Length: 247
Length: 110
Image 1 (tube, chains in turn orange, purple):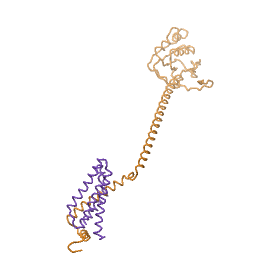
Image 2 (cartoon, each protein chain N blue to C red):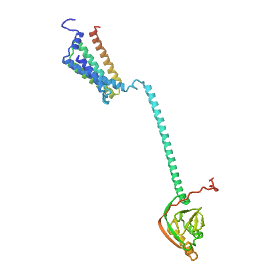
Image 3 (cartoon, rainbow over the protein chains, first blue to last red):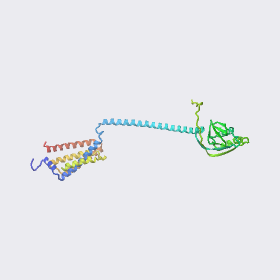
Image 4 (cartoon, rainbow over the protein chains, first blue to last red):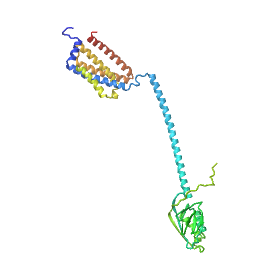
């Protein structure tokens, strides 16, 4: 430990005690860089060292199991897609069936008189000044209309005429389906207006019968592009008949 | 003293900023850090020997880092990146050990 030549320990002490020289500042800058870079690298290593310590065989095994898992998942996806498409087909088929059923219900509802109907047709007004128009004549007219393809028939805006509707003679006029009616009678029918008119007008038919001398009535047939039939009837459930099941 | 403060400041900055290592730097940073550590220990030893020169320190620091990065880059290009990195680490490790041994002799006289 000679006086001219300080030992390393003394130099270190001296450097730590007095802040100073250009050399120290340079060293400070570079040490800051080293410290910064070390911390950053340590953090980066900690962030993704899950697989860093694994051996190659382990990683291969891991890779294989991952591949198998992804294959399984893909199979599952395919199965689920199949299921989805079959479900979609089912839904579509059901939708079509529903549509068909609805259409049928509409047709049958009009035929059975449970639904109000609208469409082109004729309005037949029968005047009966002598009170001589009876069931025979009116029934005849309804039959002619049906023959000409009438889809819905209504009398006097109140009674819907369907398959079960009965015509009877009453006190003041005729009784249609339990409903007593008085003249003049209005028969509204939906169908092809021209055909319906022809059906009523032919020689010896409904119009001739009413306007003949025996009855002395008056018939006015008006063709309309929209005839509204608003009255409906409650469907009666069949008490005796049952549908025959298909084999 | 200022040198010690500089190291502290660098570490604290790294902890506070928590920067992500850019992808292109990822393979080089570990080797560069080890090379810089080698330069730092070499400088400390030189300081204790009384032959410290800040110019030499700066140049050795920068050249160490650059050469380390260059070797890793070359190794990657040649397809022997892993082995070459290991080689560099081994050499730098040996140098760090010998430098630390010299520093220890200076400080503890043992």
